[in-house]
Length: 219
Image (cartoon, rainbow, N blue to C red; front, side, top):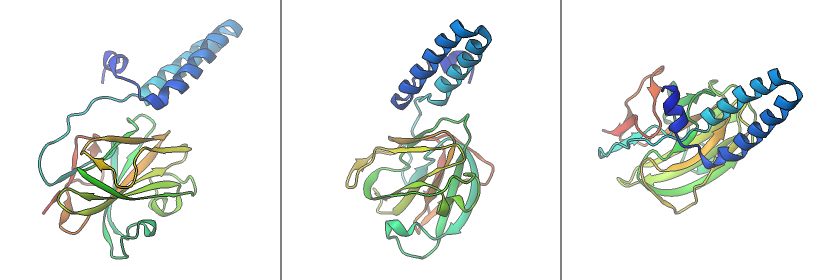
């Protein structure tokens, strides 16, 4: 992404307040000490970059799940789904995507379907790349039934510097693949738990584009 792309990319509504605060601070610091003003202006530019919300080309292929976030696949493992969602104790394939502070942090729904459960779990702020973050960190859990009838879950997991998870979904809400549903400030991770009859199509270390990259498909 070049500088012009960044300038032209819309900012998510959750970022407007932060950009305004950073900009006011920059103006004030220019009057107090010009070098500090320039530093603050650089931080303002980073804030705009962090809250960017680019349009994405959503795949229309049937029977696929898309990545709920930008980032790097940090794990593809078998894990028990979150107990708070009541999905049983049988292990499922869990794909984790780690987001750095330089990734787009707007999250997207991985499939068309219906939201069937939500659970917020307070917790720690361990490194989001750590395996234990899925069970110990603050997280927002979502359960849904896809249009093909698959029972899946996905989670927004806070990280070392993330202190706010935003989720706009509601139980019984009908959603489309690629819909924006939330955001995590300022560095985090997303997990997605697959159903039987679905298989991961990504590997550890692979780069994800939220809303575009196919992360799993029906067998």
